[in-house]
Amino acid sequence: MPRKVDHEERRHRIAEAVWRLAARRGLEDVTLRQVAAEAGVPARQLQYYFGTRDHLLLGALEILNADAERRAAERMADLGEEPSPRALVRAVLFELLPLDDERRETQIVHAAYFIRFLTDPAMATPVRDSPHALEELVASLLRHGQALGQVHADLDARAEAAFLVAGAQGLQPPVLLGQYTAQHATDLIDRQIDRVFPGT
Amino acid sequence: MPRKVDHEERRHRIAEAVWRLAARRGLEDVTLRQVAAEAGVPARQLQYYFGTRDHLLLGALEILNADAERRAAERMADLGEEPSPRALVRAVLFELLPLDDERRETQIVHAAYFIRFLTDPAMATPVRDSPHALEELVASLLRHGQALGQVHADLDARAEAAFLVAGAQGLQPPVLLGQYTAQHATDLIDRQIDRVFPGT
DNA sequence: GCTGATGTGGTTCGATCGTATCGAAACGTG
DNA sequence: CACGTTTCGATACGATCGAACCACATCAGC
Image (cartoon, rainbow over the protein chains, first blue to last red):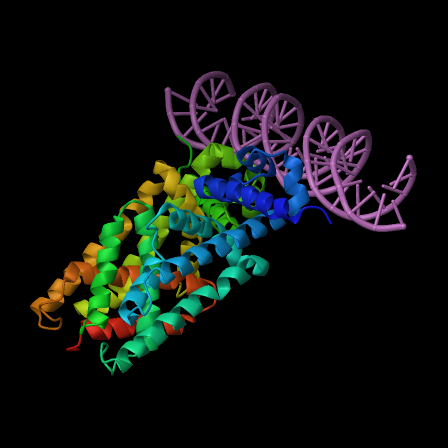
């Protein structure tokens, strides 16, 4: 078989063009010709590397999610050797805010895809599991905090984790729309974290 | 001038078709011909009553928001003569969840329009003010609750209101996607309300 | 050196898009 | 009744869409 390296590189390059267009004007403007122009490749390549337009959209989303997940894992690793539950919860929730260009683009693209998630089951699978996983992760961190005496023992970790995640997710739109500053959003989250971790 | 009555009726009828299509498959499928077919009117009427496609999208959004606001006001009025701050906060937050078909459709359509809000300032104006208004409303209700001794006096009403609204908004996607039941979402909100209004 | 699989570019096709246009029906007003 | 405005149906136009098609490169294995 021929060089596999280019394959991934090109797919990534094309996927980036899809993200830019989707984030700028929505999926309507993600046409094969526009993507080709944005990526600087002939339109024929999109057909070859992704097939139909639906497969292009799905493939670009998968690559986006993989990149975002990798970056999130890196930021978690940057917290140091033995990060406190509190710091981890904070980092997880901040992952849901558009605090840099990459997270911003990821979240806008997800918003552009959202309607598809509702009807197209194939599109939904990459996203359908992640929020549940985030909630579980935060819940386990809260329970860890309870074991350490940093979180009130009578607090329902599961429910509190779900609402914290929802709150962070709900802060996304106002920040993207420029109604809230990123600073304001992080302050609001920090305030909730202070409430949940009173002893730190 | 000829009958004005039909004018509004027809615009509403056409707008409903736009919502249905937008909610089902996103703005990409809101083509003039599809809308005409869905509304059961000749395509030429869309041109006459709304003009260009952009004006159609904008007009349909305005009609949707007006309807949603009217229904929300009705539900608030149904709370009775002198509703408690707690009941009002609950009702306001529940307005952000897809608890019936109308709210569900409204929120899905808003999701479909979201990308437009980010770039098209004309589209954004109907929505740009509402969340801020909701937050202020909840904050004033919390302050009212503080005056009545139902809410801890040292609680930051503004920040808590903002996070409650964000939390409700953040519960929207998982409910729409079927990850959370509506029951679960309302439970989570009720739990937060119990925390904020401990004395009721 | 031939062959077949793999990759690439350019072009074409039928369908559908948004919009403009033209003429006639419908209707209030004089 | 006649007239001008409003409403509306049908059609046409240029542009653009997704996808198919075709002619070449390129290169590994025989």
